[in-house]
Length: 294
Image (cartoon, rainbow, N blue to C red; front, side, top):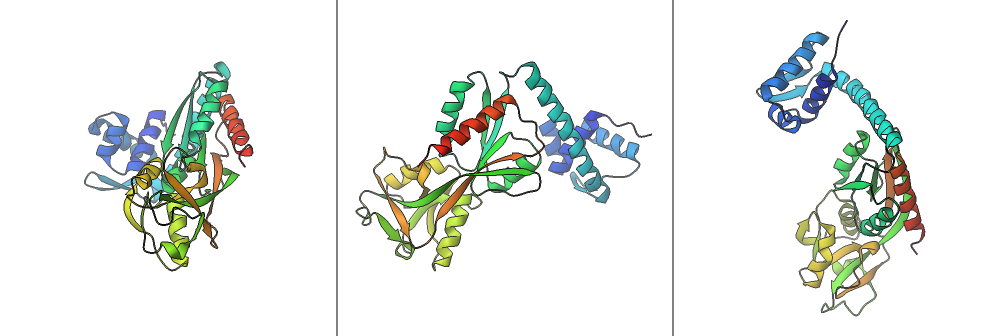
């Protein structure tokens, strides 16, 4: 009978995700030799190799991929058990794990949440859609605020708000006295934006392409909140979600004519992740926040 240790499963999971001994050892804070011996012992216990080895690089083989699916489910359930016990023993303590692809509404939401749960900490990650999908499917976050929504059999998705995309122009721009604009009028402009992989950027590029052009970007970054400052400095124009408008900067926001440029903001969670009392409170705050928006 195979005797497996929890430590072996955790090590295997990390190596399977990294597919590199050095990187996995660093994440686990163990030596490479210790990690290799643990994986070798697990393979000996199972009686089959789980990886194809190419130097320090590892690739899951068919045995490994099958075992990975079962290991993820087993460790996921154990983690949910730990979370549930912690919540039952001390419901007003702990850390809320959040991931977002859109941060424009986050300050207001977290401000309201902290009023109700001042002792609950939160950890927020700004991630791409690809990374958010990975975090969701692994059940590593309590909630995600995402645009666009992410679908999946194990994902709970609730659409919160339809957020129009507007064009931000500096006050000195020739379009600054306008209230709306057609996309085709923007084909020769320079833009600042986030990198590809973020929902608004990908949607804007697709809609502009259907209008006959691709925006020319002079700046592409990972911080959407920085875009309005760059527009105000006349570095370029920007496509900005309506919820991210900054009334304190010298910027005009133009509605887009004809084309439908609207992003959906969704609240996402893993269907089987344990929902703590703090997480339930966070969901309630989010729902109330968006319900109050015009």
